[in-house]
Image: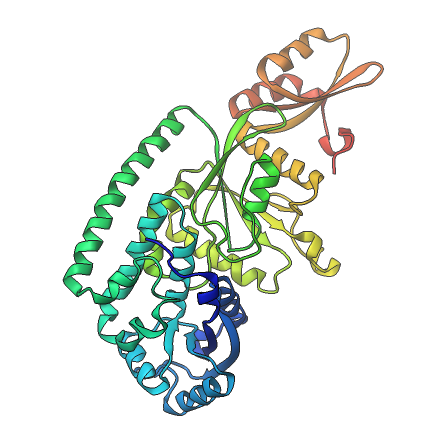
Length: 431
């Protein structure tokens, strides 16, 4: 699956965005997000048209009168494409194409096109093509001029020009072949995961809305060479990197594809094997763009997808990222305790706090003890059953910051209960 179109060719795609407002289609910022998707795909957005309707018109989606308005906007702006903010049926595409004499693209097609351009691994490429063909198959009767218009651009990447001459039987055959190849890739990936599980390596999965800063956080945590870009879906294929925690324990951190509202069903189905890393992780870091005005809506989208993947019982830490871009009054309202933490991935102290939070969950509870220096027996006991991650020395005492698993933690606490101190008070230099 090759992207045969140059940036210069793709930049010629000039579009007007169209969206419904009303009923279940009411979503603040949806068209702004569509504009960002278009920009990510290399499309120049020239204008926006909205239609207030409780439900779509089955023939033209926006109604005959609004179609005329869109046509006038196309002529005025010199646009050659119309991008709709929701998924269209084959009949709607065909009717809109006839009426507007322009390329018709819907939200799903746009997202699939972006994924086609971002896929790098064999598995990712196969998954995207499977999703594209699954989307195309029931819409063949509505593709008419759309398939040959402009000789490329959105909707013709991935499977490429060859799909334009195929019939349903050919596409079904290709879908079967893709599923067969994917099953082999998935089998190999499953073996790798089983090996990782047997090795007992603690796994952390970064999840979140697209462009929340997951890849940046992965790079800052692991100091690894990770691609970072201020674009939607900058990361498509899962990226795994090793991380050594402050106490010396080595774990694996995995970056996953970002979620988005109305993520195409065909895409979720095709990428289900990739998203299995979320199910197999020991800890989920839900990375949130705290500076976004749509923070709560984006969090709801992610929680819904995670629930559909069956991760409700997973240990999870909500990481409110980009706190440095958040207005001070708003930042104070963001939770900063328990399973929530506020950070900027570009602040070293914040990154260290994340590491400590992961360590607490990966190794055990962190407890501080203030032990007299003459009690060598207790000091030896601490080193024997716990992992000392930090030590401070006073004149007659030593303060140990200890991490132990649940079983050992009970043993340590029972014997050293009288020496336990408030870690926030005892620690020096902690934020």
